[in-house]
Image 1 (cartoon, helix red, strand yellow):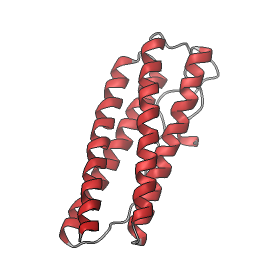
Image 2 (tube, one colour; image 1 turned 90 degrees about the horizontal axis):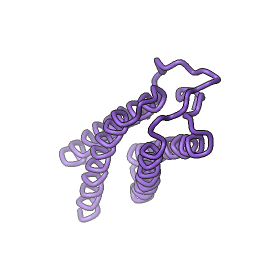
Image 3 (cartoon, one colour; image 1 turned 135 degrees about the vertical axis):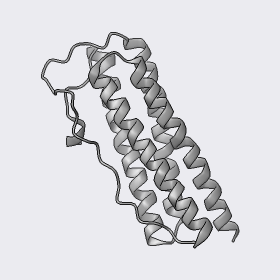
Length: 165
C-alpha cells in the first residue's frame, strides 16, 4: 500500500509540474512576437494540458479502482503558421532564449521523472503511459534545444514543421 501512496504522491507532483508548464508556455507565447515561436509555445501548452488531464484521470482511477489507464500519446497538430525557407528573426531574442533555457531544464526534469515512474510501475498500462510521457517530453526537449540553437546562432526560429517531428 505504501508504494501506491508513493505513486499517487508522485502523480500529484507530476500534475503540478504539468499545470505549471502549461501556464509557462502560454506566457511564453504572449512574450514572443514571432508567429513560429507563438505557435510552438501554444502547442507545447496544449501538450502539457493534455498530460495534466491524463495524469488527473490516472490519479482518479488509481485512487478509486486501483487501475492504471491507457494513454495513446499526443501529437503536434498541423500548424497554421506557414513553414517558409526564410523566417524573419526573433525581435525579443534575449527574452526568448531565457524562456527556452528554462523550458529545456523543465522538459529534461519531466523526461527523467516519467522514466523513473515507468521503472517503478509493474503494470503494463502504467509503464506504457509513463514511457510514452517520457518520450514526448524528450521530443519537446529536442525541439526546444534546436530552437535555442537556431535563435542563439542565427537569430531566428526554425522553418521546420513541428508535426513532422
